[in-house]
Amino acid sequence: DAKTTQPNSMESNEEEPVHLPCNHSTISGTDYIHWYRQLPSQGPEYVIHGLTSNVNNRMASLAIAEDRKSSTLILHRATLRDAAVYYCILRYSGSSNTGKLIFGQGTTLQVKP
Amino acid sequence: NAGVTQTPKFQVLKTGQSMTLQCAQDMNHNSMYWYRQDPGMGLRLIYYSASEGTTDKGEVPNGYNVSRLNKREFSLRLESAAPSQTSVYFCASSEWSVATNEKLFFGSGTQLSVL
Image (tube, rainbow over all chains, first blue to last red; front, side, top):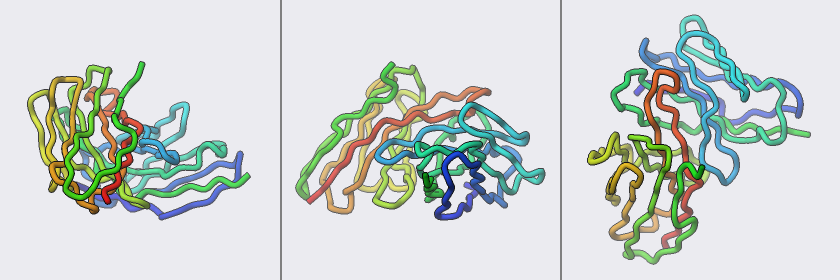
């Protein structure tokens, strides 16, 4: 499985944008980039995923580098509720179930009021 | 809509005791997973089941067994608990589609302590 590299921790101020980076230099052409987050004392929850183009949803935006070797999760206005561990994961895009996701240690985001 | 339900939420065992963690999902998903999370660490995959009747080992299967009882339920059994199995256990389910690329839904976890 291709690996991802994320900073261990980041800080942000409330109501400011946050850019969470992820490096995945060994990504293959069939790997999707998934982001999950884990709030304190909860199970992980899906945030967003993409393949080549930038993606937006109600939670966040995902910016993918043209060579796909890195990506950035963007929270447009951080709130205190966004304090969590954010995981960047690569997932094979095929329909056969290799759907298991391998989590790294993620980035712990602290949001200051 | 309950999603993924895990029981129990908390459990304390003595070394050598056995127990089964239960997981059920009501989303009609084919795939189900068991992860463990040690303090300050990311999640590690123990076992997964691509469909009813099939199970496969993940990253850390030693000391565990699983049963995919039916499409809804996927249980994790510790036959002889060890202190190294103290962890938080998460169950998840998913269904592949072009749109979701197999988004996982997680339960709220079972906190297990082995003394």
